[in-house]
Length: 124
Image 1 (cartoon, rainbow, N blue to C red):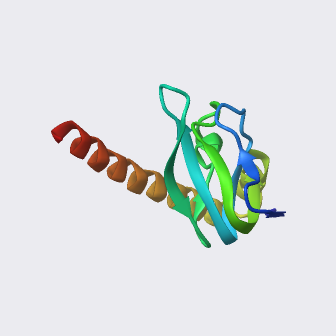
Image 2: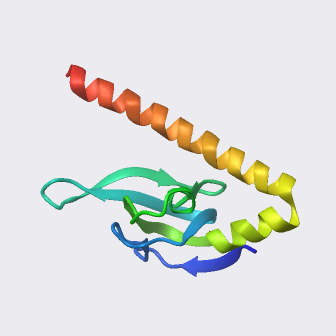
Image 3: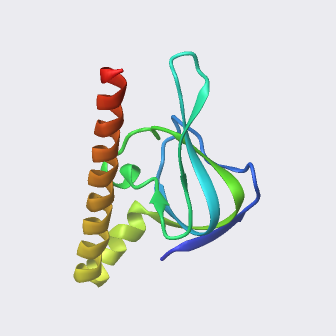
C-alpha cells in the first residue's frame, strides 16, 4: 500500500501547482516545504523529518498542490494515493478511520500554527 521512494538532496518531490494524487510519509531524511510569495520567490515554510507527513491535502481536497517540497537531506519517503486510501477503507475500515483521524489532527495543528503566525504578523 505504501510505495517507498529514495531521493537525493535537492530532489523536488512535488512542485507547487501540480495536480497531486499522493501524500508522503518521511521514513528517513528531511524535506522542506516551500511556497512562492507574491514576487515568485520560494519561501521556506517548515522542515519535516522522520514520522512526519505532507501532501495529505490532495487526498482531502482535489486541488493543485499549495506548496513545493524539496529534499534537504537524502530521504526515504513512502507514498499513498487516494486509491490506496480507498482500498484501505474497503479492507480495514478501522485502520482507514485512524489514518483519517491522524490527517485531520495534523491539519488542525497546522491551522492553529498558521493562525498564530498570522496574528503575530498582523500585530507587528
